[in-house]
Structures are given as C-alpha cells and as structure tokens.
Amino acid sequence: MTTQTGPTAREQIREMKEQVVGQAKNSLQQARDRATSSLGESKAQLADQIGAAAAAFRRISEHLRAESEARIAGLTDSVARQTDQVATYLRKVNGQVLRRDLESLARRQPALVIGGALALGLVGARFLKSSERESNRGTGKRESPGPESHRRYGNAESEPATHSGMGGFDAGA
Image (tube, rainbow, N blue to C red; front, side, top):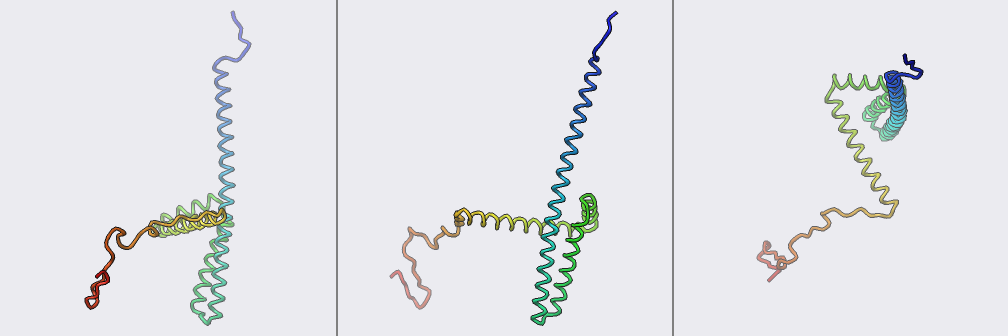
C-alpha cells in the first residue's frame, strides 16, 4: 500500500485554476475601476465645458438686452438655462444611469442622437485642428501651404495671354 502525502494532480490543477480565475477577476475589477474613474473625470470635464457654454449664452443674452434685443435675449436665456441643466445633470448622474438614459433617448429620438454625435464629431475635429495649429505655432513650424498655393493661372510654357474680347484689342499683337 502506498500512501500519498502531497496533493494529487487534480488538486494541483484545481488550485492553479482558482489562482488564475482569482487573478483574472482582480484584473477585471481594476480595469473597471480605472474605466469608471476615467469616465467620471471625462464626464466632469464635459460638464464644466457645457457649464462654460451656458455662461457664454448668459453673457450674450445680457449684451442683447443692452442692445434692446429683448426677444432674442429671451431665446438666448432659454438656451442658457437648458445648457446649464445638461451640465448639472452630467455632474450629478453616475455612469450607468447616463448610459441607460442615452440608450433610451437613442431609441426614442434616433435622429437627435445621430445629429448630436455628428455635431460632437465636428466640434472634436475642429478642436483637434486648432490644437494642431497651436502646437505648430509653439514649435515655430509653419503649416505647409495647400495645393492651391502652387497653382498657376495659365500655362507657363504657352504663349503670352491675349485679350481680344474688348473692341478688337489684342494684347499679344
């Protein structure tokens, strides 16, 4: 009769599996925590930017009132209030609720969501383009001119241009 003092192969495999699963769960939780933290920071930055836009709308409204444009100022006030409500909502809501609300809105108003995504994309592209210009200015690099700057009107190898449309005047003659 042989007696086994150490763990069997099955027990060793089971222990290894539990360790791997535990490490995978730990890594997944860390990734979720980082994503949640990043989402929270991004959401806060977006809320701040939207709040700044609301403040800009309020300043525009004040300027319009000073210019005796009360009707347009009222519209601008309304936009400022709604923009401020969006900023407040973003500051207060957690990521899961925000995702659920966006999904619900996309089901109810797909055109609005697509339009918003398009507008956000255009604003993002404009931001990236202006950031590129600023970084080029800071390094002293100049933007290369587009192909328009290299075009010539007329052909350099051709004969001089003539103009014979006005009273028979021919500049090349």
